[in-house]
Every structure is written in C-alpha cells, then in structure tokens.
Image (cartoon, rainbow, N blue to C red):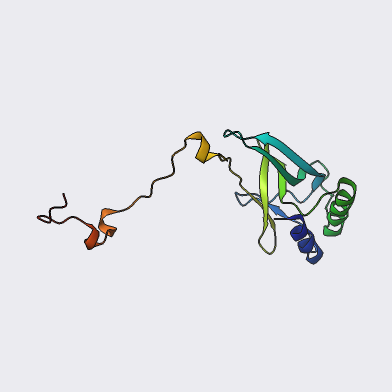
Length: 155
C-alpha cells in the first residue's frame, strides 16, 4: 500500500484497526510511535548497487489502555512527516513487536488495515547461479500427439 492510499482510507474511517496475518487484531490501545522514511543502499549478490525507500510505521503497545488513535490524528502525523522529512508517495512497511520486531506489508480489507507477510528473495538469480524452478507436468496431462506410443519409433 502506498502512502496516498492509507491517507485516502483514513479520510473514510471512524476508527483504525490493524490485523495481523494470523487474524488477531493489534490491541486497540496501540500507538504509532514512528512514521519515517527508510533508505536502504546496498549491493546484491550479483554486484548490482540498489537503492530502496519505504515509509515506515512503527506500532507499539503500552499499558495505556484508554488510548485510542483516531484516523484524523494519524493523518496529522503522516502529513507532518511528509512535510518535515520530504516523504513522497512510497510503499508502506509496518514494524510490530511480536517475539521479535516483525516487518510487514500493508493492505486494507474495507474495515481493517492488514499486516501482510513479507519474504526475502534473491535479486540477482540470473547472476548467482540459482536455477529456474522447473515446471512440473503430469504425464497424464500430456496430449497424445506429443507422447510416444509403442512402435512409433520415438523411443
């Protein structure tokens, strides 16, 4: 989800809820302790230099059970961050504390913001020798024209 998308959704909501990939909701008394721009400048295993930027939201729970973050307050935090940090319309990454700090993508189901799982990946498969995944074909699915038949001389 891009920053512009969450801002549009927040304009339409009366309350904010974040849902974890397992279906549990982040407790209603969460805080957004950070909104920032993260820049990652790195080299992949194939030798290509890369730059990535994302907007980072950090969600945190405290013993402040009466606290509720309202959509207009989060909009104000986002707009201040955009202005102060020069944040553009970037993808959003969300940090949330589980057993360790988890990094999630963000989506929306019409009611809740969904924390989506993320995966690591090799960015230089063509340069570091990782073979492409072979297509799995069931022999029963092959058409008769391409199959060998006894006595055809193809085997």
